[in-house]
Amino acid sequence: MAIRYTVTTISPKYHQAILDWQRKNFPELDILLTYWEKYFPGLPRFQLVAKIGELRSEVIEVGKYAGQPKIERAAEMAGNMFYTARRIIRAQCSTEFGSIEQHRMSLDTAPDDKARFEILRIMAEELRHAYQMFWVLDHDPTWKRPGHGDVAAETIEELLSMRMGTHVLDAFNIEFRDFLDNAVYTAIIDLVGKYQLDMMQIFSYAPMARSMGPMLGEEGFHMGFGRQALKDLAVAAARGQGAYSLEDIQRAINKWYPRGLEMFGNERTGETAVAFGFKPKTNGQAQAEYIAEVEGIIEGVNIALVRVRHPNMPPDEARCLIREVHSSGESRKGVRPEDLLLLPDRRFFRRRGPEEYVFQPYDLHGNLLTEGGRPISPEQ
Image (tube, rainbow, N blue to C red):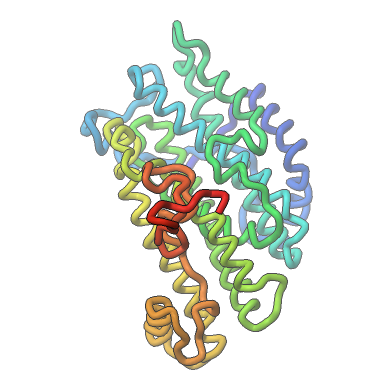
């Protein structure tokens, strides 16, 4: 079903500011627009605008204000609710700018022009999403409050000044090295974006809720690109072709997946966002659904890998074989554990989250590495 929305722009001051940011950090946008019809025929040409969708409900759907009309003015959010909303908007916008910086680092390593222009489209849509967050802040004059200053202006200026290493979330401060990062990132990290945008369709502050539908629709292309690229790279590796080995791909998954888990926040918290009507699920609930979906993505790639060796094997049989190889740690029907990809345990390589996970030496399988009955030190 097509997403219905109207379009608008932000104030000339901030519209120009984001254009200036784009010219400095994403000059390739002009190339994308020049060849848009060649690579995306029939798709409406990209425009840097805010897209205002429809509300799913006119009333707040969850939390302590459930049943009350959605909030149209930031000033109606009292105390911590106001600043929690600002924090979420700031973090969302930071991810969009950070993603553009990251993708650009390895743009030239894309395997062909088709992939390169698909990455450029992703970058352009991330820019539009940042613009959308500017609209959420800029269109509502009540973000400026007596005794609190102009929160919208201060937040926008801070966001425009952020660079690699200073973004809100760790996942957006990691440099890309090559196309493998573009592929795994869009498959795993953009999937977190889908969960966040989907949850925020119920946001009790109506301008944020209205922004989510169009953003979510565009995010679907990013995830589709990543899933297909990941599968293509893995199959090429299994055939002894391409630029990356399965070991390379596994390392990339090991790098990005823990950061994706952390993007939900501590899985033991998240009740505040639910109480304020910003999201319908706690961090742990959303993260658990994410883990299950990533498991499905990796299993889909592994089925393709098995069928490189056994082209006529039905998917269900391949799925059973994969689980047997993983559980036994041994070769079955010519398929070894190292011939498949593995999704790390949720405790692996965690920097944020529950105290018992953070900076603890858990291996890919969730085993705590010890020596003399104590966890090994990072130096080991």
